Image (cartoon, rainbow, N blue to C red; front, side):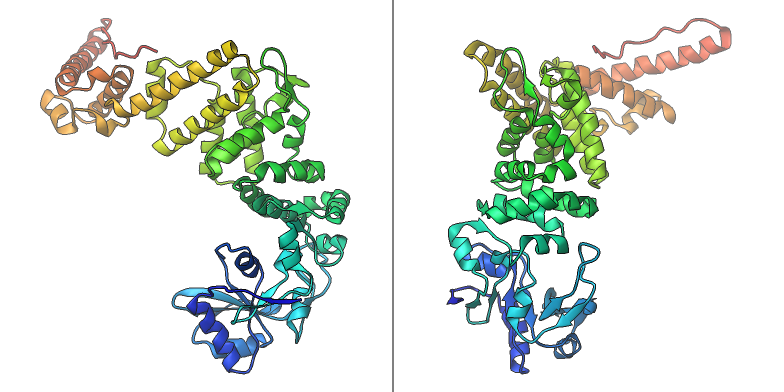
Length: 471
């Protein structure tokens, strides 16, 4: 099948294609860029396929990078950007479940397209916008269906990750899996255990960041994918809240509802997905309590380590989960909470508790809803107020500096000790953060230090000053 579309191919991509064409070779844009052009989305990568052998391709450009000569790929550098150029090829067997054991270079673009995963990714476009579509990708886009090129069992045997990619594309585009793909995934999902956790994390995260994350995760669950790559999610799909406010949604479905509402960033979405995992450790029916937040944070940490997340992301996600039920903090506690976290993390924290509260309250009576929502509103108000009321969020925000402390008489380590004392006092009582009060505190601190020194010499009991910490 052939068609023509009006696609704005970037000038640098045209330059690469023209270089190949002017030297007697074919050149097509392939893969996701063609699909995106047909769907009127903005392509992120412009990959090019050609009948030129890799060695010939390298000679046509001033600068190239050899990234995959064994598989026919050369990167041509144009105006500081790299563009992958791959020779038409037919792949051999995939004994490792990811890479072909051998590659045979081909002469026709249709041969190259026949090795690709899904019909919507198995199209090519020439420099004039003419589409080569031997497997009905355009029709499948119109029908909004994800269908494999050829036998799904063969495609998934070549690379098991394609099963997860299928539900990710379904979530991203709002498409539906073809029936034979569903059957094949159910029969082959166990092979995902052979895929690296880094690749699994990448696909799960991309799916979490889509607007269709619920559809993707629910189909991943129904087809047996999450049972292999995220069994903790399957565990909470069988857990329901009990008692007042008990929900007809499982904890897993509730987590997806929260994830749909939070901001589409990695920390928020993963915190939302994992925030109630602790219910799986309790019983077949869950009670809402602060205890489950700690359990959930522990489980989340284990999941995120397994999926090879960065230490920073693990710390941020688990911190949000651990405190997502802390809705009744006193103002002094809020100040300490705010002081030890950056504004981005605080924003993500507020984002989660707001979305969790709104989602949970849908199953409550009006009076119970008020009892849940009011503490959440107060906490968010207190956090924002604390961020704006002059609270000494860091020691640098104190209204007295080292030079001024030296004028009082403090020396060396005494300055650091006093700063810590003053910092905690100002967190608990923001009104203390004035030069006059801190100077008086420094003088009292110095007096105590000197008294301690004298007491040590004479054996007397020193008198301690109050640091203002109310907690």
